[in-house]
Length: 111
Length: 111
DNA sequence: AGTTTATGATCTATAAATAGATCATTTCGG
DNA sequence: CCGAAATGATCTATTTATAGATCATAAACT
Image (cartoon, rainbow over all chains, first blue to last red; front, side, top):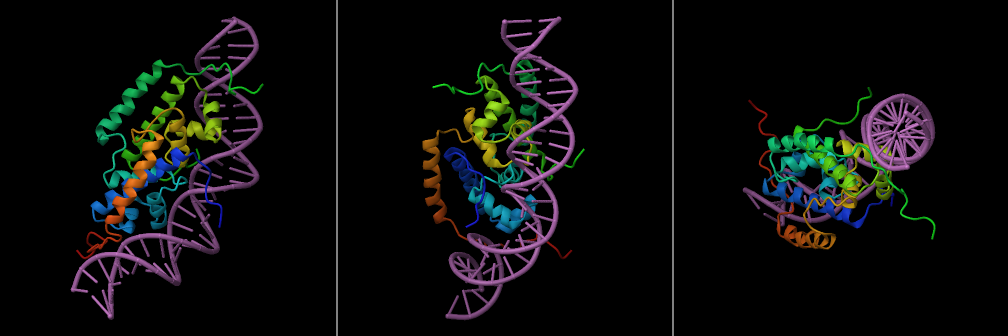
């Protein structure tokens, strides 16, 4: 068996699986085939299968694309509000420190 | 400038940017440096920068990993509930049709 | 039941992401 | 201010994902 992709924490893996489930569910609700969804998302059928399976190696753009098509909203808001949030948050970020001054990068090495 | 990655819809792009902003914000709130977060997530500093910038080409596993570390919960629930949802949803999915019978894959070809 | 079609899985070539190093710039802390 | 350090950007080598085809199986509709 060929080694698949990089290791991730259980939480991240579960999150990807959960999102894949939501996408699959949305697709079925809309009576679409995997091939049809893949075509609309501009990806191959194989990739869409991996997205629905929760493969952590998939590009986040492709996953979000599929999610949007089948009506899965991650940030409980439409496109308009989304762009507004992105903009408004940019202003907030401007007030935050540009660089973080860490007293120690490592938690603790000397035991 | 080298051509970066595949094209995605505005919504998917915004979603990635929004998530990147949330991660960056969470990181700063926790007084972590980009390098430190990258190390904890098991990725390179360059990748972490792209994640915070909302690059749609990043692996979803790496992004979710970073999000989890800085406390950004995409599915408003802790790890335990997450795994439970994944499981319970599997049962629901089992009741749904395994294959979708599309009357027509293409909207309409003959005009 | 029989037929059609979606799905799942696997393989190869290609394209793209990632790691790692390096440099310039900004910014924080003393 | 003046160092130390974080960030941002860019480059190359390598790893990895993706497209596309193909095959086998399973499921849906008649």
